Amino acid sequence: MQYRTLGKSGIRASIIGLGTWVTGGGRVWGKDPDDAESIRAIQVSIDAGVNLIDTAPAYGFGRSEEVVGRAIKGRRDKVVLATKCGLLFGEGETRGSFFTPFDGRVLRRSLRPDTIVEEVERSLARLDVDCIDLYQTHWPAIPPDKTPIADTMACLMKLKDQGKIRAIGVSNVSLAELEENERAGEVASDQLRYSLLHRNPESDILPHCVKRGIATLAYMSLEQGLLTGKVGLDRKFEKDEWRGNEAWSPWYKRENRARVLEMLAGWKPLVEKYACTPAQLVLAWTAAQPGATHVLCGARTAAQAVENAAAGALRLAAADLAAMRKSAVGLGQPA
Image (cartoon, rainbow, N blue to C red):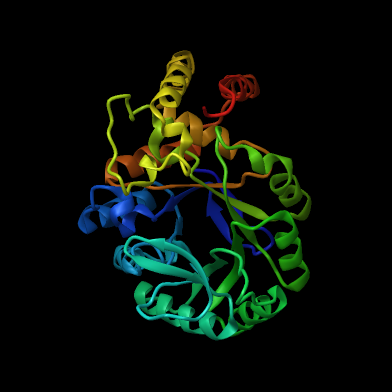
Protein backbone atom coordinates (compact mmCIF):
# COMPACT_ATOMS: atom_id res chain seq x y z
CA MET A 1 0.00 0.00 0.00
CA GLN A 2 1.15 3.51 -0.79
CA TYR A 3 0.48 6.39 1.60
CA ARG A 4 0.27 10.13 1.07
CA THR A 5 -0.20 13.06 3.43
CA LEU A 6 -3.62 14.68 3.68
CA GLY A 7 -2.61 18.15 2.57
CA LYS A 8 -0.59 19.98 5.18
CA SER A 9 -2.22 18.14 8.10
CA GLY A 10 0.67 15.73 8.63
CA ILE A 11 -1.81 12.83 8.58
CA ARG A 12 -0.63 9.93 6.40
CA ALA A 13 -3.45 8.11 4.66
CA SER A 14 -3.56 5.17 2.26
CA ILE A 15 -4.06 6.13 -1.37
CA ILE A 16 -6.96 3.67 -1.49
CA GLY A 17 -9.62 4.56 1.02
CA LEU A 18 -12.77 2.70 1.98
CA GLY A 19 -15.91 4.68 1.22
CA THR A 20 -18.92 3.58 3.26
CA TRP A 21 -21.93 5.10 1.50
CA VAL A 22 -23.17 1.63 0.57
CA THR A 23 -22.60 0.52 4.17
CA GLY A 24 -25.51 2.73 5.21
CA GLY A 25 -27.87 0.88 2.89
CA GLY A 26 -31.20 2.24 1.72
CA ARG A 27 -33.35 1.92 -1.37
CA VAL A 28 -30.82 3.72 -3.56
CA TRP A 29 -28.51 0.70 -3.25
CA GLY A 30 -31.03 -1.97 -4.11
CA LYS A 31 -30.20 -5.00 -1.97
CA ASP A 32 -29.61 -3.95 1.65
CA PRO A 33 -26.07 -4.63 2.94
CA ASP A 34 -25.45 -7.05 5.77
CA ASP A 35 -23.92 -5.23 8.75
CA ALA A 36 -21.81 -8.21 9.79
CA GLU A 37 -20.33 -8.48 6.28
CA SER A 38 -19.79 -4.70 6.20
CA ILE A 39 -17.79 -4.98 9.43
CA ARG A 40 -15.70 -7.79 7.91
CA ALA A 41 -15.09 -5.63 4.83
CA ILE A 42 -13.85 -2.76 6.99
CA GLN A 43 -11.62 -4.98 9.08
CA VAL A 44 -10.01 -6.81 6.16
CA SER A 45 -9.40 -3.43 4.53
CA ILE A 46 -7.45 -2.36 7.60
CA ASP A 47 -5.55 -5.65 7.61
CA ALA A 48 -4.66 -5.00 3.94
CA GLY A 49 -3.17 -1.60 4.72
CA VAL A 50 -6.15 0.66 4.09
CA ASN A 51 -6.21 3.16 6.93
CA LEU A 52 -8.48 5.82 5.38
CA ILE A 53 -12.16 5.14 6.12
CA ASP A 54 -14.69 7.71 4.97
CA THR A 55 -18.28 7.90 6.19
CA ALA A 56 -21.03 10.47 6.82
CA PRO A 57 -24.15 10.86 8.97
CA ALA A 58 -26.35 10.93 5.87
CA TYR A 59 -25.18 7.46 4.80
CA GLY A 60 -28.10 5.41 6.06
CA PHE A 61 -29.09 8.23 8.42
CA GLY A 62 -26.44 7.31 10.99
CA ARG A 63 -26.21 3.59 10.21
CA SER A 64 -22.90 3.81 8.34
CA GLU A 65 -21.18 5.69 11.16
CA GLU A 66 -22.47 3.18 13.70
CA VAL A 67 -21.24 0.21 11.66
CA VAL A 68 -17.84 1.85 11.15
CA GLY A 69 -17.62 2.53 14.88
CA ARG A 70 -18.27 -1.12 15.67
CA ALA A 71 -15.75 -2.28 13.06
CA ILE A 72 -12.84 -0.15 14.28
CA LYS A 73 -13.29 -0.99 17.95
CA GLY A 74 -9.85 -2.03 19.16
CA ARG A 75 -8.29 -0.80 15.89
CA ARG A 76 -8.71 2.94 16.28
CA ASP A 77 -4.97 3.57 16.20
CA LYS A 78 -4.78 2.01 12.72
CA VAL A 79 -7.48 4.21 11.18
CA VAL A 80 -7.63 7.68 9.66
CA LEU A 81 -11.30 8.33 10.33
CA ALA A 82 -13.12 10.76 8.06
CA THR A 83 -16.73 11.85 8.34
CA LYS A 84 -18.81 14.88 7.41
CA CYS A 85 -21.27 17.54 8.49
CA GLY A 86 -23.79 19.71 6.72
CA LEU A 87 -26.75 17.48 5.84
CA LEU A 88 -29.67 17.41 8.27
CA PHE A 89 -32.30 14.68 8.06
CA GLY A 90 -34.14 14.62 11.39
CA GLU A 91 -37.91 14.23 11.35
CA GLY A 92 -39.52 17.66 11.41
CA GLU A 93 -36.16 19.41 10.87
CA THR A 94 -36.65 22.94 9.50
CA ARG A 95 -33.17 24.39 9.86
CA GLY A 96 -30.98 24.81 6.84
CA SER A 97 -32.04 24.95 3.19
CA PHE A 98 -34.03 22.29 1.36
CA PHE A 99 -31.71 20.03 -0.63
CA THR A 100 -33.55 16.97 -1.88
CA PRO A 101 -35.93 14.16 -0.93
CA PHE A 102 -33.82 11.10 -0.25
CA ASP A 103 -34.75 7.55 0.65
CA GLY A 104 -38.04 8.50 2.27
CA ARG A 105 -36.75 11.57 4.11
CA VAL A 106 -35.82 15.15 3.27
CA LEU A 107 -32.21 16.28 3.30
CA ARG A 108 -31.51 19.89 4.26
CA ARG A 109 -28.17 21.66 3.89
CA SER A 110 -26.85 23.55 6.90
CA LEU A 111 -23.35 24.73 7.73
CA ARG A 112 -24.46 26.93 10.60
CA PRO A 113 -22.15 26.76 13.63
CA ASP A 114 -25.00 25.65 15.90
CA THR A 115 -25.92 22.67 13.72
CA ILE A 116 -22.27 21.71 13.15
CA VAL A 117 -21.68 21.61 16.91
CA GLU A 118 -24.65 19.28 17.29
CA GLU A 119 -23.56 17.10 14.37
CA VAL A 120 -20.01 16.56 15.53
CA GLU A 121 -21.22 15.34 18.92
CA ARG A 122 -23.65 12.91 17.31
CA SER A 123 -20.91 11.60 15.00
CA LEU A 124 -18.46 11.16 17.87
CA ALA A 125 -21.12 9.17 19.74
CA ARG A 126 -22.09 6.97 16.78
CA LEU A 127 -18.44 6.28 15.93
CA ASP A 128 -17.65 5.84 19.64
CA VAL A 129 -14.44 7.87 19.41
CA ASP A 130 -13.04 10.96 21.10
CA CYS A 131 -11.69 12.61 17.96
CA ILE A 132 -12.38 12.61 14.21
CA ASP A 133 -9.26 12.75 12.03
CA LEU A 134 -10.79 14.49 9.00
CA TYR A 135 -14.05 16.42 9.35
CA GLN A 136 -15.52 17.51 6.02
CA THR A 137 -18.36 19.77 4.96
CA HIS A 138 -20.55 17.44 2.89
CA TRP A 139 -22.08 20.05 0.56
CA PRO A 140 -21.78 23.84 0.44
CA ALA A 141 -24.49 25.90 2.11
CA ILE A 142 -27.12 27.36 -0.21
CA PRO A 143 -29.84 30.02 0.06
CA PRO A 144 -32.00 30.82 1.83
CA ASP A 145 -29.97 29.63 4.83
CA LYS A 146 -26.55 30.27 3.30
CA THR A 147 -24.08 30.54 6.15
CA PRO A 148 -21.00 32.61 5.29
CA ILE A 149 -18.04 30.31 4.68
CA ALA A 150 -16.00 32.34 7.17
CA ASP A 151 -18.49 31.50 9.93
CA THR A 152 -18.46 27.80 9.09
CA MET A 153 -14.68 27.66 8.99
CA ALA A 154 -14.38 29.55 12.27
CA CYS A 155 -16.56 26.91 13.90
CA LEU A 156 -14.49 24.07 12.40
CA MET A 157 -11.24 25.71 13.48
CA LYS A 158 -12.64 25.96 17.01
CA LEU A 159 -13.50 22.25 16.99
CA LYS A 160 -9.92 21.59 15.88
CA ASP A 161 -8.56 23.72 18.73
CA GLN A 162 -10.79 21.76 21.14
CA GLY A 163 -9.28 18.48 19.92
CA LYS A 164 -12.54 17.09 18.58
CA ILE A 165 -11.22 17.01 15.01
CA ARG A 166 -7.67 16.92 13.64
CA ALA A 167 -8.09 18.31 10.13
CA ILE A 168 -10.71 20.06 8.00
CA GLY A 169 -11.92 19.05 4.56
CA VAL A 170 -14.53 20.18 2.06
CA SER A 171 -16.63 18.21 -0.43
CA ASN A 172 -18.49 18.95 -3.65
CA VAL A 173 -17.33 22.55 -3.88
CA SER A 174 -16.65 24.76 -6.88
CA LEU A 175 -13.19 26.23 -7.35
CA ALA A 176 -14.42 29.60 -6.10
CA GLU A 177 -15.89 27.98 -2.98
CA LEU A 178 -12.69 26.04 -2.35
CA GLU A 179 -10.64 29.23 -2.57
CA GLU A 180 -12.97 31.01 -0.16
CA ASN A 181 -12.66 28.15 2.32
CA GLU A 182 -8.88 28.40 2.05
CA ARG A 183 -8.94 32.10 2.82
CA ALA A 184 -11.05 31.43 5.91
CA GLY A 185 -9.14 28.53 7.45
CA GLU A 186 -6.96 25.44 7.05
CA VAL A 187 -8.23 23.12 4.29
CA ALA A 188 -6.49 19.75 4.23
CA SER A 189 -8.58 18.03 1.58
CA ASP A 190 -11.29 18.28 -1.05
CA GLN A 191 -13.60 15.33 -1.75
CA LEU A 192 -14.97 15.28 -5.28
CA ARG A 193 -16.43 13.06 -7.96
CA TYR A 194 -13.66 11.99 -10.34
CA SER A 195 -13.19 8.97 -12.56
CA LEU A 196 -11.82 7.82 -15.88
CA LEU A 197 -15.25 8.61 -17.32
CA HIS A 198 -15.84 11.82 -15.35
CA ARG A 199 -12.71 13.92 -15.78
CA ASN A 200 -14.17 17.43 -15.38
CA PRO A 201 -12.09 18.23 -12.24
CA GLU A 202 -8.93 18.07 -14.38
CA SER A 203 -9.78 21.50 -15.77
CA ASP A 204 -9.84 23.36 -12.46
CA ILE A 205 -9.98 21.65 -9.06
CA LEU A 206 -7.16 19.13 -9.47
CA PRO A 207 -4.57 21.61 -10.82
CA HIS A 208 -5.48 24.02 -8.04
CA CYS A 209 -5.05 21.33 -5.38
CA VAL A 210 -1.62 20.45 -6.79
CA LYS A 211 -0.60 24.09 -6.61
CA ARG A 212 -1.94 24.60 -3.09
CA GLY A 213 -0.87 21.28 -1.59
CA ILE A 214 -4.43 20.13 -0.89
CA ALA A 215 -5.24 16.43 -0.84
CA THR A 216 -8.18 15.09 -2.83
CA LEU A 217 -10.50 12.21 -2.03
CA ALA A 218 -11.97 10.99 -5.31
CA TYR A 219 -15.33 9.23 -5.12
CA MET A 220 -17.29 7.23 -7.71
CA SER A 221 -14.01 6.34 -9.39
CA LEU A 222 -15.41 2.93 -10.30
CA GLU A 223 -18.66 4.60 -11.43
CA GLN A 224 -20.63 2.56 -8.89
CA GLY A 225 -19.24 -0.70 -10.20
CA LEU A 226 -19.52 -0.08 -13.94
CA LEU A 227 -15.74 0.11 -14.39
CA THR A 228 -15.23 -3.25 -12.69
CA GLY A 229 -16.54 -4.99 -15.81
CA LYS A 230 -18.95 -7.01 -13.66
CA VAL A 231 -22.11 -5.12 -14.62
CA GLY A 232 -23.34 -6.85 -17.75
CA LEU A 233 -25.90 -5.77 -20.31
CA ASP A 234 -28.52 -8.05 -18.76
CA ARG A 235 -28.33 -6.36 -15.35
CA LYS A 236 -31.60 -4.77 -14.25
CA PHE A 237 -31.90 -2.06 -11.60
CA GLU A 238 -34.68 -1.16 -9.21
CA LYS A 239 -36.55 2.07 -9.87
CA ASP A 240 -35.08 3.83 -6.83
CA GLU A 241 -31.47 2.71 -7.37
CA TRP A 242 -28.89 5.35 -8.26
CA ARG A 243 -27.67 3.19 -11.11
CA GLY A 244 -31.15 3.20 -12.59
CA ASN A 245 -31.18 7.01 -12.56
CA GLU A 246 -29.97 7.99 -16.02
CA ALA A 247 -29.54 11.64 -15.02
CA TRP A 248 -27.11 10.68 -12.24
CA SER A 249 -25.44 7.77 -14.02
CA PRO A 250 -25.92 8.15 -17.80
CA TRP A 251 -23.16 5.64 -18.46
CA TYR A 252 -25.54 2.99 -17.11
CA LYS A 253 -27.85 3.28 -20.10
CA ARG A 254 -27.68 -0.04 -21.92
CA GLU A 255 -26.08 1.40 -25.06
CA ASN A 256 -23.46 3.23 -23.00
CA ARG A 257 -22.74 0.18 -20.89
CA ALA A 258 -21.97 -1.72 -24.08
CA ARG A 259 -19.35 0.86 -25.05
CA VAL A 260 -17.73 0.75 -21.62
CA LEU A 261 -17.64 -3.05 -21.57
CA GLU A 262 -15.96 -3.00 -24.99
CA MET A 263 -13.33 -0.61 -23.65
CA LEU A 264 -12.68 -2.84 -20.64
CA ALA A 265 -12.37 -5.89 -22.87
CA GLY A 266 -9.66 -4.04 -24.79
CA TRP A 267 -7.62 -3.83 -21.60
CA LYS A 268 -7.04 -7.59 -21.48
CA PRO A 269 -3.30 -7.21 -22.27
CA LEU A 270 -2.95 -4.77 -19.36
CA VAL A 271 -4.87 -7.05 -17.01
CA GLU A 272 -2.49 -9.86 -17.93
CA LYS A 273 0.62 -7.66 -17.76
CA TYR A 274 -0.13 -6.46 -14.21
CA ALA A 275 -1.88 -9.67 -13.05
CA CYS A 276 -4.79 -7.59 -11.81
CA THR A 277 -8.48 -6.96 -12.37
CA PRO A 278 -10.01 -4.14 -14.46
CA ALA A 279 -11.18 -2.50 -11.23
CA GLN A 280 -7.64 -2.47 -9.86
CA LEU A 281 -6.38 -0.94 -13.11
CA VAL A 282 -8.96 1.84 -12.83
CA LEU A 283 -8.17 2.59 -9.20
CA ALA A 284 -4.42 2.64 -9.90
CA TRP A 285 -4.97 4.90 -12.92
CA THR A 286 -7.03 7.31 -10.83
CA ALA A 287 -4.49 7.48 -8.01
CA ALA A 288 -1.72 8.19 -10.54
CA GLN A 289 -3.36 11.32 -11.98
CA PRO A 290 -1.93 14.74 -11.02
CA GLY A 291 -3.77 16.03 -7.98
CA ALA A 292 -5.67 12.80 -7.30
CA THR A 293 -4.01 11.83 -4.03
CA HIS A 294 -6.55 9.41 -2.55
CA VAL A 295 -9.29 7.26 -4.06
CA LEU A 296 -12.36 6.12 -2.15
CA CYS A 297 -14.16 2.93 -3.15
CA GLY A 298 -17.00 1.10 -1.49
CA ALA A 299 -17.28 -2.60 -0.73
CA ARG A 300 -20.31 -4.70 0.13
CA THR A 301 -18.17 -7.74 0.91
CA ALA A 302 -14.80 -8.60 2.37
CA ALA A 303 -13.73 -10.02 -1.00
CA GLN A 304 -14.46 -6.72 -2.74
CA ALA A 305 -12.56 -4.84 -0.03
CA VAL A 306 -9.47 -7.03 -0.45
CA GLU A 307 -9.56 -6.56 -4.23
CA ASN A 308 -9.81 -2.78 -3.91
CA ALA A 309 -7.01 -2.59 -1.35
CA ALA A 310 -4.59 -4.45 -3.61
CA ALA A 311 -4.80 -1.58 -6.11
CA GLY A 312 -2.89 0.55 -3.63
CA ALA A 313 0.32 -1.32 -4.44
CA LEU A 314 -0.13 -1.22 -8.21
CA ARG A 315 2.12 1.13 -10.19
CA LEU A 316 1.30 1.55 -13.87
CA ALA A 317 3.82 2.55 -16.54
CA ALA A 318 3.34 5.99 -18.06
CA ALA A 319 2.58 4.52 -21.48
CA ASP A 320 -0.17 2.33 -20.01
CA LEU A 321 -1.70 5.25 -18.12
CA ALA A 322 -1.77 7.19 -21.37
CA ALA A 323 -3.30 4.27 -23.28
CA MET A 324 -6.11 3.94 -20.73
CA ARG A 325 -6.85 7.65 -20.95
CA LYS A 326 -6.89 7.47 -24.75
CA SER A 327 -9.39 4.62 -24.71
CA ALA A 328 -11.66 6.51 -22.31
CA VAL A 329 -11.44 9.71 -24.33
CA GLY A 330 -12.36 7.65 -27.38
CA LEU A 331 -15.69 6.77 -25.79
CA GLY A 332 -16.73 10.39 -25.97
CA GLN A 333 -19.68 11.51 -23.86
CA PRO A 334 -22.51 9.21 -22.74
CA ALA A 335 -25.40 9.17 -25.21
